[in-house]
Image 1 (cartoon, rainbow, N blue to C red):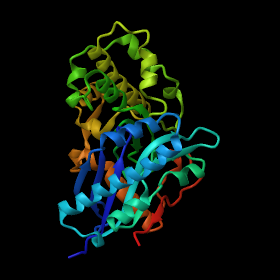
Image 2: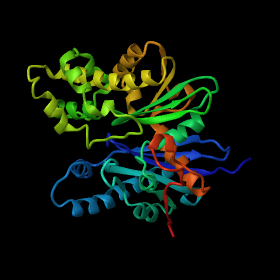
Image 3: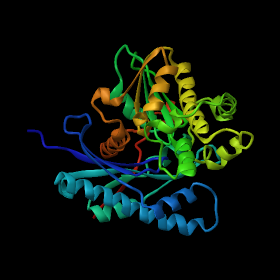
Image 4: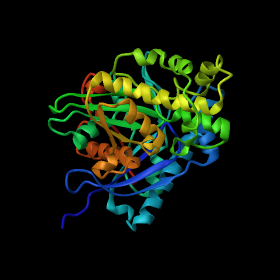
Length: 370
């Protein structure tokens, strides 16, 4: 029997709804999901993360302490996963940690991206080598540093003679177009995923997210507001491009709603759901008129969002990665375990056609446990 080759992928996305630790076995040469654990982000850490997403006073102290706190939280998620599976830390080759993005500004001069979650802390508190800081090499090469998952999507999801779009809906949505000829890969952030819907229901109902999209489903879309939201200049930018909370956030949404004070809250939520769906669908239809759209990320669990996407993309077959026997919740965690294996084998992890980097590169840095 082949000895397992275990890696753990750690992911916390722009939704900031928790830390996912995903155990993956690469013994067969392709990633095989084994188990996963999600660790909620405590309120005090979440508050600091949200503050760090916008300029403020005393940022250096806050980023330094939050970096350690997030590292401890990531380690807690790993240790809980080990306990759940009965594995020892010595059985894990390495952890691939994405970190928590608090600022993503690739279009400044010079551009930068910042993910926190101290990898040294994770290594010490788990006893496992950590590979982290995956994005900044691509930035140094003139790229966006995002999205990085298209290279993983290409290896796992490409299908001969079939155009596929892999759609990840987290806080921000991103797509990977995989052509049936096996040669063309295009990937970029389309814009908001769950982030504005989550923020608005938190503001109005003190809920973390709109379960199944039920609140959005109870409202009616306001065409004028939808048209204004879709007029954002980001949607006219050519790819490579990437975005985050720096662009689509509460302050921006408040500005957009300033002239629509008469709209009922549930109608705003319905409009935000359509905004996400149309901003995604418009880009998909520019890339391919038919084919499969396979959804992963938290948005795949939003029934109203999935139904609306299916309706808008009437010439595409819309499904989730569950149809390929991969739980939509764990795809990104698996991807960062995969990036850790790429680092260990000195294999490249970025696609310059996607990020805009000047060349392919081995991504990440090693933080040994010993």
